[in-house]
Image: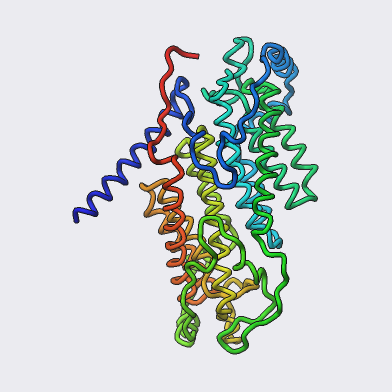
Amino acid sequence: MRYSCKKNTQSMKKSVAILAAVWVTAVSLQAQVEPAASHWKTWFIPSGKAYRLPPPPAYKGEVTQVLARQQSLSAVGRQQIMYWNAGAPGYRWQQLMGELWMNGSSREGALANMLLGVATYDATIAAWDTKYAYDRPRPYVVDKRIKVYAPKTDSPSYPCEHSVAAGVAVTLIAHFYPSLADSVHRMAQQLMASRVAAGVAFPSDTQAGFELGKRVAEKELQHTKGFVPKKEWDGKRPEGTNYWQGKPSFPLAGLNKTVALDSSSQFRPGPPPDFAKEMEEIKNFKPTFRSTANAFFYADNNFWDDVLHKKIFEYNLHLNPPRAARLYAIAAIGMYDGFSACWDAKYTYWGTRPDQYDTSYRPVLFFTPPFPGYPSGHAMLGSIMAELYSYFFPSEKTYFQKKAKEGAESRFQGGIHFRTDNEVGLEMGKKVAAFIVEKIKTDGADDELSLPKQKKGGL
């Protein structure tokens, strides 16, 4: 009982500290934005300081450029400002990558998604080191003729954090999805122009930020070059009633090099049971409107990405780029490591699915994913996300866990997973997430939350 009380007290203190940091960031224009973030640990680069930029040029000559952009601002330009104002610097790019990798068939999709989150975070930490090394004021601060068409922030102007995220995204998307290279380059140019026209960045801020993002992304592509094995599957598979049959998707994903986990097999479960009793259970299950709706909802929605965007908005963390980037990075690592661990188990045991175990059975979802069923990927990845989000938003733990269970149950309701697939997936997810949480506790961001310090006077 004494330990439980102590643990609850620590959790409450952490919740209060997070809410305090969010509140000050959201409402105080005099508060610095995470000035200590430059000391947070990075994942694939040595440190933020290792990528510190040279001093910015004098901004006097650029004031006229900002004013000229604002004077010639068109309706389309205003729309671009509004579009890129939404969310944290990485928000629009995270949305795009979520669509690309979740709906694609590339064996490197999970790697691409993970790298976008991690490289944006690492590059943001590097940007924060440069920002507070030179403390360059924003355009609307240095010249009152410059209007501000974006949320005001008291973080320094150089380099532009939105352009940093763009440099990362363009480099990675062009690498993994080369047919989109021209499109994302145009998007980045629009983003950079919008920051200048909004009065929150000088042209040199956007250019420096974009180049910094590119440099970090290129380094991290190099660092992760061998993470996804290039070798082909040898075609070997077990035969029998309990084993899944079909053309497998990503059969070697369990060999991926992990980021936070020691290996993909670190939390590999034991073998699945004989599914005779569970086949009887699923055949006796009577679908309802509610159960069918739940099955289709989780089959057709990227729920965990969507809810993270939502919580970042709700907690005003979109106004705190380092913390938003940290959240996106850790979620992406959880997804990548979890995917690798789940696929390790799937292709270790080749557990069958209901419609193969009993060919007379027809699942509610009228399709079966092209890979083994044990354990459930939906259950495991949902469990990981629920535990990670609960760490960052502890007051909403019950909500996240409820959604993880709903997602797992949806696979049984849809008729494409046995009960054991889901139960084992949920348990694996908790173990993976707990291991990741222990890692991120040492990154410096939560040791002593860097509450913004008040400056004397106003802007």
